[in-house]
Image (tube, protein in one colour):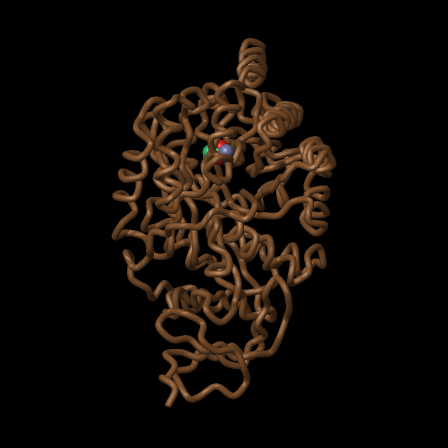
Length: 461
Ligand code: URP
Ligand code: ZN
């Protein structure tokens, strides 16, 4: 006799990036073992009237990120609980090594911070803060151990790589099939424009976007893509915000390059009009690259729908408005950059994307689950619903609505940029490896239950 199932998710409409079907999902030992309509009796999670999506994958978050003497406010516990409540079952964060540090030790140290604390599964991108022989020599062993992606910053003192370092890092990553995620902004241009604004007395938060206009981003993106072409390497462009960068991506693809590109809900749903908020309120919207004038967001939605952009991450990097953001009272350049969003990505993307016919159900799953999993080298274990995949599921009732309020969210930060927004669709449950960890907004799982993920190379690497 066949072994009994541990759980059946019954009567839902199962949605993957490939299709939409009315199916029950049978789970045993944390894995999907059956998809059908006549599954044997087992404990049931009723999904009548709901969509059953793959657990969502957020490939770009910064939990307890140390910046100087401050630390982003969500730690591995609170951030992963918030993620779970937002339908997310897999996150990817970054190693925290500084320039010259031992990279393998950076991985060990970051693993140690996360281990025993995470509520959902976690991958770590390597952070390449230099391209020394020693650092690059560490890559083969790290790739073999399942760390198959790396972040390359073109800006931020202490993190950024110059063009020679970019070339060496891109080539070394390519040799090991490590997918390089690039933060593309022209560091010197940011420094020049910021100094000029401050010298003119323009110190308020509303001047932040002028210190990093679209050309700052697109010039660096174009340069990163040109450098990658010279060493035949693929590129994953993080947080694309503007038409100019979309054009640079199209140009690179036209010459045959492999480019994976990501945007975030803040660039789709908000605009630089947020900086009209009175006084220091506008500090809430300081992130890099910055929010763009209205119009760029429409271009990003179209690019997502048309597969010019493949991924929506959050770049979740929360700072309290009443505490850490206050550091920039005298100069916008001192405001810690980053927005919270790990819990609100899926409600926003469903509510503004699917419900407003900007994204099909398939495309929604692709950009929020399947393609991020593919980039991480985790597909089809993560990012889809198939026999043999981890039983990671997010169940959403399209008849409900979600109202976003900082007070009701699990993110540990004193605001959300989407305060008071109501969107169609309501997450009703999150299942991680067969365990119902969220029901009706309540986290039912155990902190520490999440696993650290070792990965295959991405097919895009
Ligand atoms: O403002 C942002 N995005 N902060 C987080 C670090 C980064 O640039 O990804
Ligand atoms: Zn970045």
